[in-house]
Every structure is written in C-alpha cells, then in structure tokens.
Length: 158
Image 1: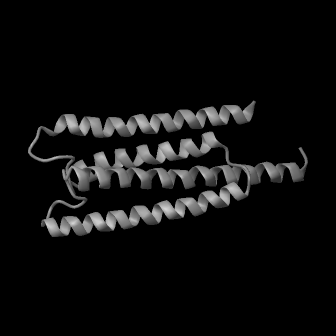
Image 2: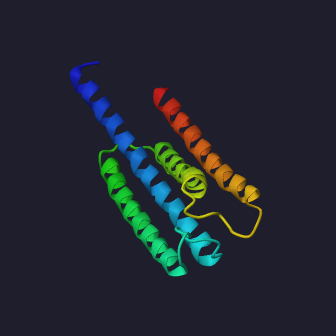
Image 3: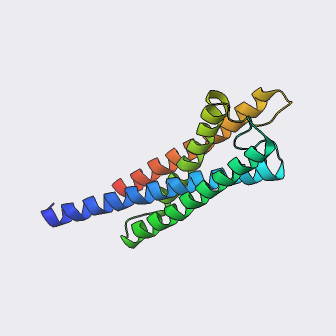
C-alpha cells in the first residue's frame, strides 16, 4: 500500500466513524423524543424533573425537548458531512443509531431514575417490572447496534 492509498483508507475510516457518531447522536435524540412524547405527554407518567411542582416538571420537559431537537439537527448535519465524504455504509449508520438509542435508554433508566432520582418510570405502582423493562429495552437496542456494527466491520474486511 502506498502513501496515497493509506491516506484514502484513513479518510474513509474517519468518515465512517463520523457517520457512526452522527447516527449515535441521532439515535439518542430520537429515543429521548420517544420517551418525552410517550411517557411525559401522552401517558403523563412522569416529567423529566419530578422533584418539584408540576410547572417545573413541564419546564424541564420543554428543556429536554429543546436539547433533543438540537441533538437531532446536529446529528443530521454531521451525517450529511460524513455522507458527502462518501465512506459511510448503511450498517454503520444503523449501528450508531441503535447504540445511541440503547445508551440513552440505559442511561435514563440507571442514572436518571436510580442514581439521580430526577424521576421514575411511573408512580404509585411496583417499580421493579417497569425498571427492568426500561433497562432491558435499552440493552436490546444496544446489543442490536453492536451486532450491526460487528457485521459492518466483517463486511468491510472481506
């Protein structure tokens, strides 16, 4: 391999990583949006910050929604840049998306719900089944993303 082809491989690797991280950000943002729309607005099981008044909880939901939208838009711009560079494949993009979604779900279930206790999945119920389902859903998404990433790596090496 000469210096020019090595440089091309390095640029492709960097672009592929950028594509992964762009879709990781998008996956986390979409999962935050699903959480916020389904559990905060439609079911009204909790707000992002439930340790104060309902008004504060609604404001915290608005801040969460704004942050998820900024993350989603940033992810689209980063992905557009990676696609322009021409080295991002569909498996890598889906891998990043599912790893991001799963990471958000696990973070929310363990850090937000249990460590920081900013809110619970639901109130006035036995929490264990809800907590297990919440984190298990995140683990399924994360594992799916990791498997897709492994498959993408395998296809590139053949």
